[in-house]
Figure (cartoon, rainbow, N blue to C red):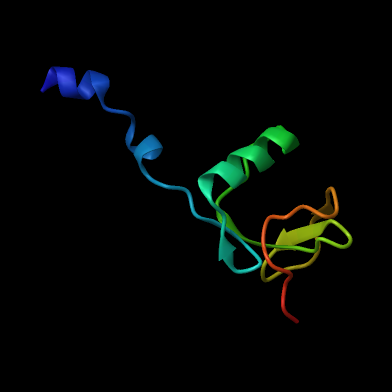
Length: 79
């Protein structure tokens, strides 16, 4: 049992993070690329992103900031 505890990754590392942009779950590879570009960890949550302006924020809130426009991360928000 001790060997299993030493080899097994922590529980947090085993669970998949859930991040959605414009209602679509983001694949792990895309998320890793976004985090590398932003040089920060993106918290779990549901976000909107406007590819035309680069505006983004929580899905149910206001614009929280702007990033690079034109990222191909998810379909355009509806509404």
